[in-house]
Length: 305
Image (cartoon, rainbow, N blue to C red; front, side, top):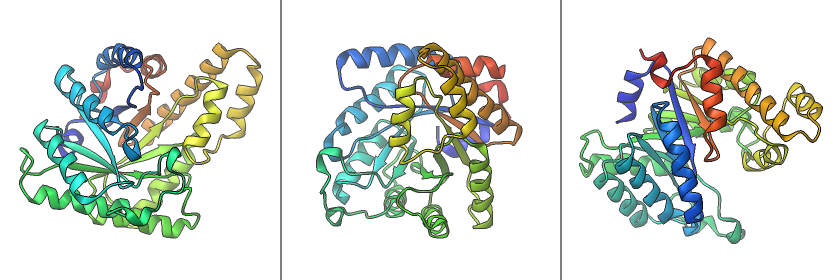
């Protein structure tokens, strides 16, 4: 379903993110969790994408498998890193043939095994360039939907780690929207005030597309540390840190605290009329299902327009 149709159907979208598993066992575990999350009837699910060939084919295969074997609507990530125009064109053609309706266009980071990679080799230096290329592909009429792909881009409530100047950061975001992005999905955050401020700054900058809030429940203390690294320096409020510290070595207690915190974030976001909530699931289902139950949601259609 094209993202415009998704937003027309849902007053608040609920969606989940998966990453491509590295092993057949991981794939089996993922699809067991997908089966459980499918019952929540999300508006869509997204699938992450590795640069430099690390998970590209696995991403493509996972997207097509989700599209053809489940009722879920997958949105693949696509990055600028390590790509030429013909490669991106081939990927878009493959997704168009599979009737994939939307793409999340990202700048991306070089793979860890390519730390010295020269970005000058890439055809697209910024996500805005990739968005413009997808729009050009859409205009070619190669997609079965005459509108072509719906396009999402990333937003950073806590600030982009590579752009400390927050005025310049907003200029970059507006450039992505002006190039043709249909919606924004944010990086994870743990203090809703960062999201509300980000939303207001978007409004002041004339960015009028829907903004979806990214939420990742903390499920373990080591995972909390990895979370900060993956997010480029996530800020953990002192109240959250105190709650986790009180748990000591009790891993189950840490998980309960993390899920409770994320639930309260979601409750407040709903009260503040968030346009959508995107759960970074880490390929698990229990934390997300617990949040739904605590929010009193039967499934994602509980807040249909």
